[in-house]
Length: 217
Length: 215
Image 1 (cartoon, helix red, strand yellow):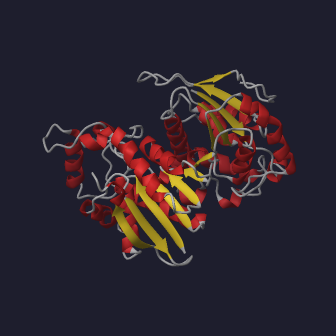
Image 2 (cartoon, chains in turn orange, cyan):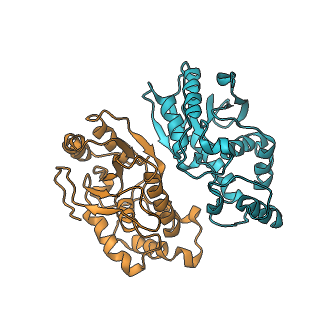
Image 3 (cartoon, helix red, strand yellow):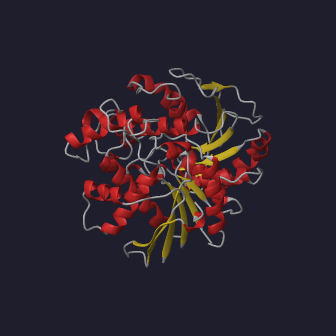
């Protein structure tokens, strides 16, 4: 199985580096980014195209689908990390974000309730593992394009073969990689399925999709 | 006015063998035939949007229904089947001490059918009922007049029991246990409607399976 994760195109909130609502649409630049890569994604010959339910991902997937003989399937398992309402509009590196992040990692310890505080790390991790197991129910020779989000994609990679949580320090490199995955960038993963029980074959691969990307590995 | 056509997936080999199943069982040849007959039956209904469980047997049923349609389709875990304990997957219930399904049910009885009772890695009754509520919320938020939703027996009965209770009780056990007195056949069609945004859901049809009356 080949999976090509593509981050949605740019939005106004991305440009301002602010946390955004699910309804945030693509900016004109975001639309151009997707139009630019669409023919190359088609050449990769996907068998499926999935998208997160958020508007910026839906719009991105529809642009890609114009070049594909496929219908876009929305999967709620590939949505972005659900954050508390008070974080929307706040800057990524600002004090509110840092405070949020510390609480997010320690949620289990402090028994935070998901409804009030957004998805906690344990809940988010469970969803990622479920998303992985959903992918594994598709035919082993599938080539799946998934339009998703920076945090989701990076944590999916971190947890592709790891069910246990990352430590706070282990997660710092992952958090830095989130900023390295620019709008409309992609990463390709490969898995030999079905894997023997107790083994994991998910791995990052050098993509054969001929698309310029700012992110490597 | 909103109408939701709730469909249980077609038959799987596990349904025939009455074994408890996980996420990746496929439709049997008979199940594929049922899905085709259901799709023909639904042909004239102008659905605006489709929702489906992400499990293989539901996806295959959805594919049959979606055939010529270009409406938005969302795969959601809100419509997935209740996750059963891993030790019971692939096992048929027999009332003997060494049977894992039996052991699970005995433990649940011993816990006085506590909705928060957890045996292994299964979904608890409270989690199931909350998720059925999420499914109804998803339909409300979609706001389109005609929805088709492909789902599974236990979660389907739970959704319908929330509708039937109309908020009179939110007790997860009461909502869940009423499902034991309901039969849901493969590709059975149930319809719920609501008159206006704030109106409660009403049950119009339950488990109509006239499209395969020959079985």
